[in-house]
Length: 370
Ligand SMILES: NC(=O)c1ccc[n+]([C@@H]2O[C@H](COP(=O)([O-])OP(=O)(O)OC[C@H]3O[C@@H](n4cnc5c(N)ncnc54)[C@H](OP(=O)(O)O)[C@@H]3O)[C@@H](O)[C@H]2O)c1
Image 1 (cartoon, rainbow, N blue to C red):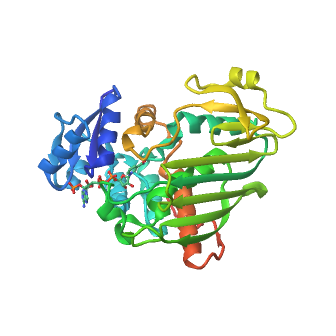
Image 2: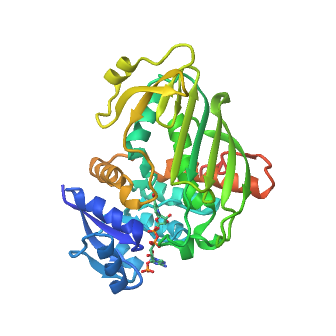
């Protein structure tokens, strides 16, 4: 099968990591870059350590769509541009990487869904923490039944983003950034769904604002009514004085995970059994303590604990898309799946804007005609 050509739109911090990840995949090649200024784009990429010497540059997004050399379009522009670009690329028959948030409103989410469904192209959305070893292990632990039936799940996305961030000028504005959940905390909402295995039925949220410079509230607390009687909670904030934190808690009726600890109540979790069953060689398990006296199991793995995109596991994401295109299969992180995360974010923002009034999900109820 031929090498897949990749075109990248929006040359900045994140694009550099997409470029590196595609560059390491033997079945893909970066052929075209789309941006507003070639010198600036190439300087930025050199600064981020991304090699693009073999790729041409264009100021016209349409060139990506019209080029026979481009099989995959990767959208890494500011948030408000994603939806139109994704719809146009799907209509042109291109497979897609879409950075989060896929869209900033329900109408655009539905437009993406319809365009992708009609075009039958393959898509992947950058909730790349699905390829982080710690999160994969926690997902597996729950899916394997070792936590039992999930009763509560909590994920926290706490990242102090201010003017150090390359995209500060667009992210802090409502029109181009969206909201804290749409721009940042959607990773936590997505992890809540993926790790708990439960979809949301209703949300109720409060938000507040402390960090100057933003046009939108900078902390949101979201209560989630999940399927099968479970509850969930998400915090998305840029206000707190601590290092980047992606906190995960999953409480089942057999056992609990709190960040790097696994524990039970009356019966301790069997360390040897778990070590034998653990399918991830990069995840190590050792004896730990919960509080000062209870036995627990400590998870040692690469954690989702950095805001730096060069730390993010984009490789797994790009490898999965390339494989899906080659095999003619859907990815597990398609725009259809991501739509549920984005709807939960939009519903929470709506609830917070209404002073915490509950909002039912899904927001998009009807499937439009094919
Ligand atoms: N999945 C993740 O973990 C993750 C992490 C970080 C960011 N992201 C997402 O990635 C996207 C980009 O973020 P970033 O951090 O890379 O920001 P960034 O460094 O500001 O990069 C975006 C680039 O887009 C270019 N751009 C702006 N307006 C454009 C337009 N109208 N047409 C074409 N290009 C345009 C800008 O370059 P010029 O000014 O040179 O044109 C800018 O450098 C955002 O959607 C963000 O949410 C995702």
